Amino acid sequence: MGITVLSLCDGISGGQIALERIGISVDTYYASEIDKYAIQITQKNYPNTVQLGDIFKVDGKKLPKIDLLIGGVPCQAFSFAGKQLNFADPRSKLFFEYIRIRSEVNPKWFLLENVNMKKEYKDVLTSYMKVEPLRINSHDFSAQDRDRLYWTNIPFDSNYIPNTETVEDILEDEVDSKYIIEPRRAVLVLEDEVKRRKIAVIGSDAQANRIYSIHGKSVTLLGDAGGLGAKMGIYALPCTNPGYIVKRQNGRRFKPPKSKFFALTAQDRHGILTNHFIRKLTPTECERLQRAPHGYTEGIPDNQRYRCLGNGWTVSVIEHILKGLNWH
Image (cartoon, rainbow, N blue to C red):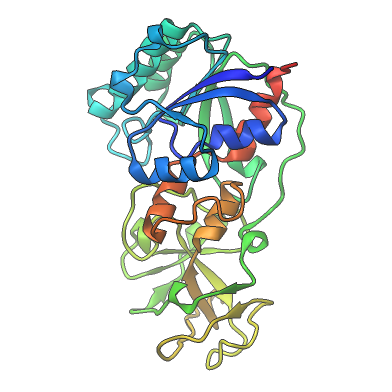
């Protein structure tokens, strides 16, 4: 016999992937989600998912007994990286919907994810959740740097071996040249940022223009971001032969470009970025960063795949937490 799950702001159902991987059977999985692309991904992979629609319209009193309540309400209202509008932001209302529904369904277990935030905001969420949050960075479970808070009453095993993967480990062996970015202006090495894996910028030092090393964890995937780096960041890969990228470069192959290929050749006294090319991550590589199954988000436009993955969970983190359910 399996468990009954309710997932609020379900996204692409990372919770279902995690439960499946750790061998916990699910009788019914209810999902509250309004994004059509996220729902399309979920129903492609888990067609038995019961979609409930808008969280504001979910009536927990009409649902059967819920064993596990999970959710990752949108985090922009509390993020250090955002405007930090906190509880004045309409998006924070989703947190209070989570609290309302939790009281209605009274689950045996619950899990809520959000970004790391100012202590004053965190304390408010904690007062409603009535448990102290776990602070977990995805870099311990994947090749992605993703700092998050998890409020849960599920026993957590802190004895784990940290994941040592880097961006280089999740790169595809062959990608289309459309992911390569042609430099448009001088690249400057940022001495004080090297230790943070940010090794250069194209033009102004905005998030979308920053170039990162593949020899470390990735930057956090984002659901909403624009510019050259969009939602996944830009990375510098060594280039052995800038005039002929069909040949393998650093052990990887690129499909022929539609236009002439240019290597990035910029060097200062640190000698960091010479004879490199820069490119975006592919949707498949972003799936690997979030530890989603290969091809999980296929079937929708690439820009929507990036967005849905950026809004999702790092599945391996959720796996580790849910192992504490000890369901028999």
